[in-house]
Image (tube, helix red, strand yellow):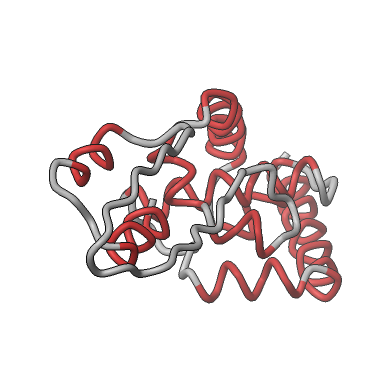
Length: 158
């Protein structure tokens, strides 16, 4: 049994080495965001979950191979995909804000983004109605009148 497990691990290592050639974009993202480190901070965990589901669903990798890319166990890949599905369906703001650059980078972006245009007028008050799914903390920024620059900055950061 031990010899067979060793052969399987060698085979997975060989497949991993070959698949890295075809998935240079993923390898670069993983390196740029340092996603292989053992860290449970939210910004790393959420990005790993997103990349794991992307590798399994879009690149058709096994759970074990996807885990090898991210230096996590296959069971963590399974859990990450499950959590991704829940947060993605709910459009959880915290999750989406943590992973937001990744969907755009991979061309998998169903997240709606809005471009805010404004004209700065010094002596005129303009009322503006904005509809969307924004986090409650964002709404506290509207307690006082804002300039157009302040308004665009708030929505660019959300």
